[in-house]
Image (cartoon, rainbow, N blue to C red; front, side, top):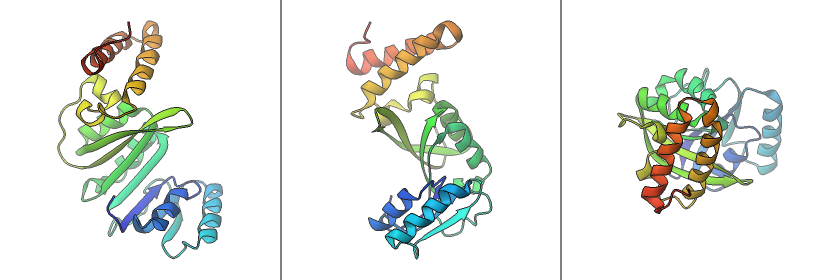
Length: 209
């Protein structure tokens, strides 16, 4: 993110991200939205406590509904499922026009990547972060044409973007374990697990079998 960005934080919860963005100079202004009044009340308390009220605006709304896109250059959507992100972005096609997306899906990651690929977005980068022992991807995306994704890439991300991440080996192992566990109950899981193991051999020289 460029310093001084104009950011919309969707599903802000208690506004910890907006306050941090302002305090560190990464954003000049933030519109923090949430669909629930309770978290926004907590967000208002934090904004008041930190004295960031001149730069952080709070709004009760569903996703990006009712927001004028003019002047905003970055949209953050984090900590929710990929299907919810797809719903939010589908209702806001203006996010393909000159806006940088920062997305951290906590589930349904393949669904989100497929939507981005097929809906005129290009994923520019991916990285992994660990929180409370769980590993999550962070994607950046913007409007643009995208190369096709293999089934494994839909779940993992493009290897040229994510394969060298220090957390990727552990992340891949977790995907292998979950997919092999699901194989008896899912027609495509066995083939997907085999593709994961092929990737592990290619990148790390051993598939763990």
